Image 1 (tube, rainbow, N blue to C red):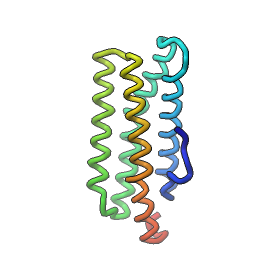
Image 2: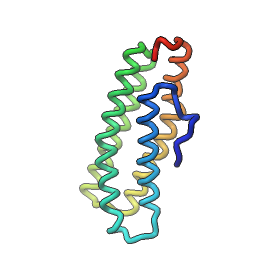
Image 3: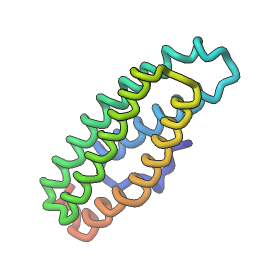
Amino acid sequence: MMWKEKYKIGVDTIDRQHEELFRRVSAFIQVVQQKTDWEEKLAQVKETMAFMQEYVIFHFDDEEAYQESINYPDLENHKKAHAKFKASVGQYAERLDKEGYSEELVQEFGGKLMTWLIMHVAAMDQKIGEYVQSQGDESK
């Protein structure tokens, strides 16, 4: 799962944050898929879980503040998508705490992260870039 230039929306702060999210999720997927002892992977898995819980809030807050600043017309739907994803990450965190960090559950979480990130950045966030372009450079 690699960052691609086509994912850029043309807003530097958001693009840098997206790139960091892709980098972290990609590294997480690689760790989970390594053919090493599961116990050796757990520290990295837990670190990624903590990162995702913190960083998505930080990123979503920045992205939503930017959308407000440009009067983005689809802001409310974007906020709903963000809230749903934050809730999903929280639910996985709870499940991992209660059920334990099983390889199967961690792989399921990794798959959800990857799918959501690609779909959200490649589809929904691209609309922000399109809106910015349609408004001219004064929106940046």
